[in-house]
Image (cartoon, rainbow, N blue to C red):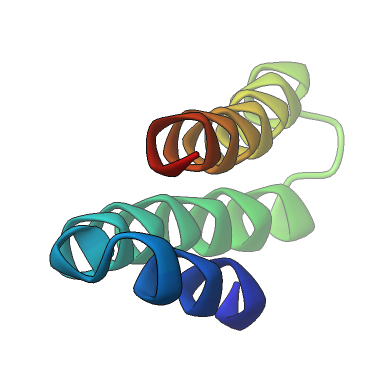
Length: 69
């Protein structure tokens, strides 16, 4: 995450706060989903939500890097 934010800072400093907030939000959701899944390992819906959160994070990275190119 820090490398990503560093890249954003170099290429589009005005966008860093926006991407940092979005990244913080998706990371918080991932932590909550992971904690729930750790307590409920057989919950397939929770597993799917966690996978979607990681996909959302990957999409955030891709959109940001596409935007600042």
